[in-house]
Image (cartoon, rainbow, N blue to C red; front, side):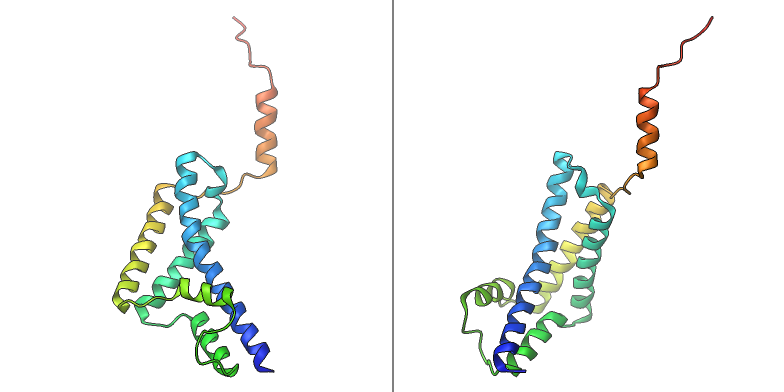
Length: 153
């Protein structure tokens, strides 16, 4: 593969990494707002489980002292592309600079754990709900359409 394709692949990995981080952060914001504003979709079981598992993976990596596989993959691709720095296109650099900043490792671990606890807490306080089956919805509609029973005394 050519250096240009490796660089493009690395840029795509950065964008995917950014999208993952955005899903975790903005997903939690949407859940909190949705609970307060009574948005039904924020209780979707699939969405909530995927969101919870996403932050749990981040917490597990941080506690284990692992580097995120997406970070490793991006660095490897950049090395294969012959890139030593992140100089180049604006969007990949912007996304990269937004994701990575300098701080002590324990600060990141503590932040991930705190955010993970927030997600778990929200999961408990505002649990997801299973989608109702069409047959359940039809039965409820049919019951509401029926005339109330009259008492024959």
